[in-house]
Image 1 (spheres, protein in one colour):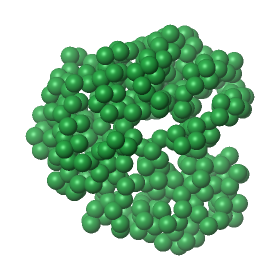
Image 2 (cartoon, rainbow, N blue to C red; image 1 turned 90 degrees about the vertical axis):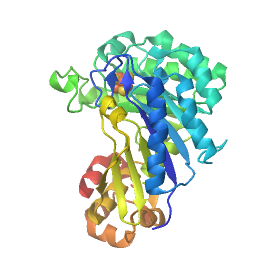
Image 3 (spheres, rainbow, N blue to C red; image 1 turned 120 degrees about the vertical axis):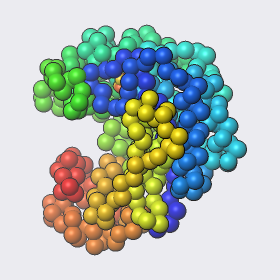
Length: 373
Ligand code: SF4
């Protein structure tokens, strides 16, 4: 297999408070050792470079948890190392997730000065009842202020995460949320439906959610409003102005490689031994305690490789090319299609010549994905 594009994900595992729908590796903040964590990330990076070799990263993403809690000065050692080793340049997309409840002007300008050039703001809703039901720590004005401050600091690439299908949400509330987004003139929107995941407070005590009819109306209204904002729908939940697609996420969907650093982070790397997934220990205290930054490795079998690649790639409206599939899995795309997607072809759920859903397949994407499992 060729050397694939490689991204870098960095996990910041702390939050002010755990949201009831959250199944991420996030821990309520109890006086975290930010300086120590910043140093640990550098050692963790060095360990991965030693194991898997050094290639410049196509993008960086600080996710969490709540990365905007992290004082920027403690990320300096990591950025210094990345620059010393020529792993990033002035054109590398570098995104940081920000929670409006942690709005801090000093932090925002500090990230920007470090080289962060894209902010992903976890708004979820601007409606007070929905925010309360979701257990969010911010209100409407903090969310708007964070986006305005980010622009004032110099960020031109801003994503907003917005949820629908949440408790208390009506189509009118969804419309109002999107109207606020329109006025903020951002470059990227992630508009996704709330799902109830195991190991969350909502799973143990499910909230009342909007019924199917309301969801359908919401989606219709939402799609129209988002289209009118000039944001193109390029992935199941992602919308962007032309050229503003998230490179980091595109790398996931196109089954590229990535290092995952930090407590609980996942990585995916193509090696001479095949494709492996890596995982760091989840508890921040255990992560700190390690000195070797061991990554648990899970090799992927050929059967899983093709399915995993397409479970990601078919989320893109444009799908992925046969050449990309072959490069990233080492499998013959035509053989794979004949063996695993014959039924999807029979039902006209795919276009020909690449792995891409037809209009019909896009509307029944879950059905197509189930065929891969
Ligand atoms: S802020 Fe984000 S990561 Fe933290 S608990 Fe809420 S949803 Fe999870």
